Image (cartoon, rainbow, N blue to C red; front, side, top):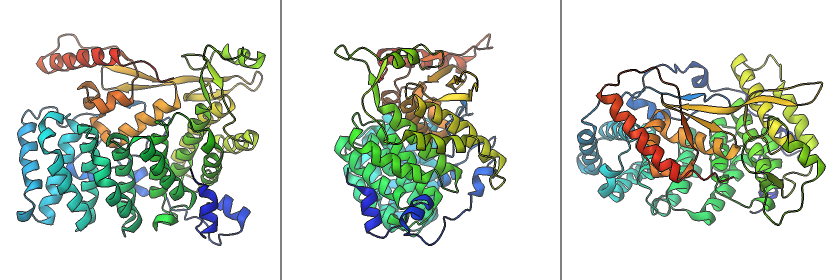
Length: 476
């Protein structure tokens, strides 16, 4: 990976306030505005087609306790027919209007989000991709463009077509750089992440996009003409972490990446701070790998750590390299965020910062520890307490997220599929199951006499469990 930090500074691009104070290159401070949608969104509202026009998730590490979203499509037995009609509308562009395309795109996103439609769209993938690309290239309206970007994401995760990346990457990169709308830039960044992960980019393509995304982060969005836009920077951080889970050896890039991420811990936006912190935890986790037969015996300190009650389950992990040269400095910064009490931030953001950074700090102090919920420190013994992060999937299962790579992938899949995650998981979407090979255990149920719908659901669950059992080798 190129020296992005040096490139940014030499090109005159801005960096975060902390870096600016050291380098003396930035006269203005970061915008302090928060996105009102985050605090005003009604989580209980039933989703509609329009939800996909502003689909960006603001879920944080400790906030997804359940993926038990009600599926508004559960009773739509005729969805394949409706989807076929919408696909035909999208392909018949000559007779369409901007408003008509917007509605067709919104319906396509809704149907493919709440249903695993691989069979239904299999023969139309290439033609649909052409139609979506035209909507983005034409840029007739912000809504049409963002919905077309969203549709490409869902097409990529549904079809697993390995040509999607090469057919969309130049356009997506150009859209991120040149669009006049920051909302479109952020949506295009998320779309680029999905096509890179599921569209056949390969490791070289993933590393290329990680370099591009880290450049966005290091310049606070200025490299793409979105200076100090928290949504664009957050999207770049989230996608960067999602892609990082696919890279095995990141030793050479760890030091510089953490320094850039540390600068973002000073952001005035809690979403940026948390996304940067989660990536730091992931980088520290990557500096440890499972012990191999030819490894030396563990030191006394490592043996002591291994016997702590709050360590993650799984194989014994061995340190391979230093993730960052000055961990004590980083720990002090994380401790400050884990106990921040300023009145300048909302109670909601303060709670998110406390819970997220307590968990992140726990991992930085000992990378064998994965994400924790309700993390606390006993001041007398300096022992870390907290429950392993678990996520409820629908009404039928519980998934243990004991490693940061699992969290990054779950969060990435959740951003794409939103309320449809459980449906795609249970119905055996290969992209979902291949990228999250985590065994799920059954939750307690209060149901006594299942109806036909429940029986059908149970059958899907049994089938998915059989599939998962065959592919549940932990990547740790």
